[in-house]
Length: 125
Image 1 (cartoon, rainbow, N blue to C red):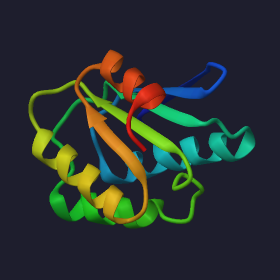
Image 2: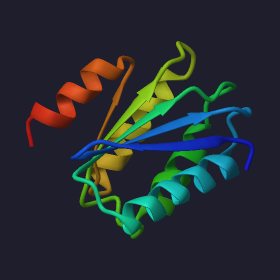
Image 3: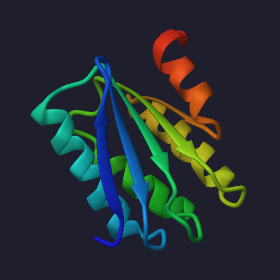
């Protein structure tokens, strides 16, 4: 995997920093499987993923495949905030959020980490 995945825990939230490499479907799946394994190891109440991975966004077809691949990994029971810090590709990120919610995930995408923290703590359920 070309991404670096760093975990940091607070009492309720697992913060995940994704960095390095260029955005790639297989690396994205591998990174999220690592997140799911960490969640299984010690379940948090919520997950905050901050992506600093660069490159072209996943295609809409890849986004759909990604969401389908995440089913059954134990992430459905958690509130997940994803912070995407690039201007390009926001449409695909929003589509991923919609598909994830339709698939039973409680997930939202943000451009600002502070807003993501606020939603994780106080957002409507």
